[in-house]
Image (cartoon, rainbow, N blue to C red; front, top):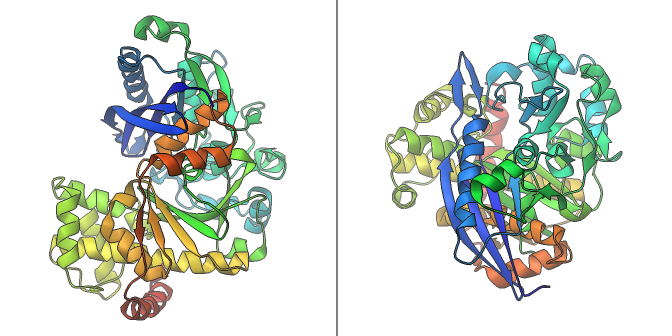
Length: 493
């Protein structure tokens, strides 16, 4: 490991983005936020898009700030984002319109239509991906059915982090961790699945060769060098999927551990060496996504703190600490929610959607903020336990420890509920796992660390972790029995 190297991570989430500078020295990583900015969906003519032009401007501004940092410029830069969304480019490399946001409702009903052409079990056998209407596969199918002129004109598809990396470097490359979220990539073949591409009828060459995370794309584009004053900076195709970056930063040792990467979404799973495509994995709707170091992230997507984030926005953005304090004092188990109910996907008023859900399921919704926050956090913890139980059944082994990383690890009440509900010891942190993983995969690409094991060694040495031992169980066990019956009754409302 070299004496000191600096890297810049662009970590873009579905609600906000940030630029983080990391300095790696003597096996320790020190991080500092350069900028933070909102990333809101743009509603236009009845559809939801991402304003990628605005995102690019934020990246450019952060590069300029990093260039004037007194400790010196970064040697590398990489972008990670959420999964499934993509940009389309013309023959000359120009962007063909704004990219759709995955919460756009045009994909409703698309899985059912697509599965008339090929059975869902066959698609799972090819991709190993959990069926969700938001997946790239169904976004593309919606465009095919609409005879989209944008798709017909397109010559290259790049997922969101790949598109932004192209803007930074001028190099178009696909990367495995983000490609694997699409439900078009075949992890066994290591490429886009030919049969699915044929069924979609995509333009020839639209999907390019897929490389491993941790590759240098090239130097920063010349126009950006002129605008920012940065020279000698390498643009890295790191772990483009934010969850892959976060899982790379899980400070785990040994075996039989699981992780929850908790932010807007909760990603609950384990790390495997090969895809697991069994009938049980298919029935339980687990997904096989690409990870760093050739690993497979075997997991399930559960809606995470999205419900709380949207309630907070509707309430005028009070501090999270105040909301959690109110929830701590609220009566337990007043009502249950299914965080994955389709009505929670993108409602105009989340508190109203929660009241509607409770009404439709014969429950009385809490009439005060703390009660609403509590039922959100309790329902998440109960859903985590059900997913972990299913995970143990599919794997055929018990799990002994749970790592909770990401922004949700800051929520002490959620961590406590998760330990009590699951009966597993929880280790919370690092809170900024995604940006940390982004930085350290860059370090691996540029030769500063050797492999995934060394990445995790650096994380353990650099960041404090907070343990939560399971506490009171009887109330949670009773609640779980009620919650299990509740989900069976409300399925399909």
